Picture (cartoon, helix red, strand yellow):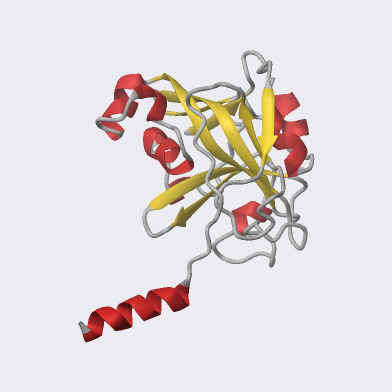
Length: 210
């Protein structure tokens, strides 16, 4: 069955992304059914993509063979997991935004203490915490018998929705976020809100004079 996934992952990111919904991602005893994803295209094609300006040391895995992991660290505290797709050298990928923990619930609960089951992997940082995935897995093949494994969906979702990507400042209205309609593990949509730095400086100045 991974033969079909291998062929799929050579396709453009926006075509791959919705077809990853329902697929299973596993590490150790924890398996997550993917319920929400975002597509990011390659170099020069998508200003919201890490690949937009070409390869760097940080995003090198995004330009590697399709079917590998691209894991990056963001906001100084979170890891995000992407499935590399499109032909090698182009740099596309699909961010796994959310999912349902289907095996290893007790382990995922221990990693996310106090979270309701629907929130264990409801968001990209929560998902990597539940799976115990960090930069160690950057560049890891996902379709082989390695520690991090991507497997086809047991059944395709009946209803898939598409809309703008979450929290990106560039190409914010591109409808490359895909999710399973009505699934409670899908994360809430949040549009990017630019920071008003001049206002922040005025507030800081007034507080310093108080």
